[in-house]
Image 1 (cartoon, chains in turn orange, purple):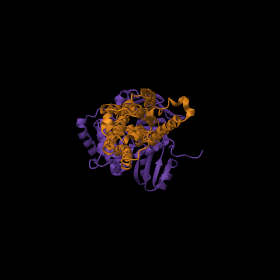
Image 2 (image 1 turned 60 degrees about the horizontal axis):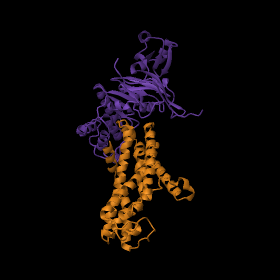
Image 3 (image 1 turned 120 degrees about the vertical axis):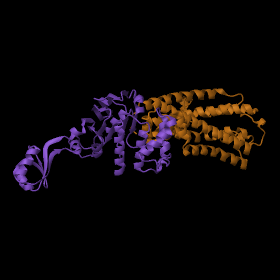
Length: 270
Length: 306
């Protein structure tokens, strides 16, 4: 069932177009940077962008910094929102359930396929950015790759930290996926599920930036999204990353629990 | 009596304040061709969805193929083929790919035999020439045939079909009917829900009639169409017959008279003795349409002012 769902997701041209678009933006940014050589000054613009002009090997991290705040959550939310509501809207949900596919099983299969999508998307962005970064921006040898803190980083360390970053971002996106998947079990409209998930994320981002929301800030889902930057400090600043993993974990567990409870007791009338 | 394939006791479904299905006791036996009739909005589809575990009943018990539903619906479903409220398929995939994908999604469909089985059912429903085209390009009738094919892929013991001939042309309807009769003769129980009386009348052996959520009757088609006790006669001289029968004629349409209180034999004898030519005479039988109209109210899609 899981294999079938993954095949279904990646058999759709839509999925590949989404991934392609996700990779296109960082590529465009890299081209512009390479052509004009006008980088943002340190401390300005998207995370990391100031540092990459010198070494392209750091560009995957910068690229994920570009797509993470908006594009990646939109893509994940659309795919997760589509998961159940899309089948319901097309009428295929009832045929899957009487096939029979158990409801829990179907939900797990959908979740796994969304996870695979997240990983493929994040990896595709990272790989594209690495290729683009090293070929367009990689003017300095890799031994001089530095952390945000300014200390040098070996290629091996960089690789480990990039993998950690991909995992952390993947985990954050799993929170988004859980939210949209839960909404997806409530409605028969994939659009409503995706937009509902995004609306909550935007609200969360607004509150994070608001001083008056200080009391709840640390519990908001988007609070620690950018904490992966700390993985590129020396030594790694684990505090926010750990909290991010924990807060996101609570959201994932609660939302998936709600999605399961809602879907297994739902009257399928679509 | 053969084993029950579907049996429900006091099946009830309430949506908020609306009682969609109320205390329905269905009995479908092995080998039946069961027609489930009722006006639009009478609760047919809700009942079908409850039988398949898609909708959870508010009260009552369901047993399908010997398994409790919805608790053990997963054990019953592998032996059921269903078409619920119109077909559905992924439009960007071909008919063949849709069937394979659905077959691969659940238990009971081995991948070794999949290609052969899919090819067979496509041929059976008359789609073998269109199996490789994307479903997006299918007509309504072709989608309907594809839905039927999906129900048949694993040779189910029970077919639950909701309006299976929707969108088919007359030739397609005959094709599907012959297919269903053939499958039934090979042992498949057919549960067919429809508001098309002609379809049920030509296919089914037993009928259940649902009206406003109540099962108003459940009987064999023949007993529903039993003689009414009146006689219908077509005579050469209607006025003379009217005068002769004096008050026993309850209805007249041209030269056709409906006569009450006289057996057919006696009626014929009297007419012949009086020298009135008889073209046709016989007991009056209710059509299924009459029977159903007597038993049911207007469908929920007709909304009269209070």
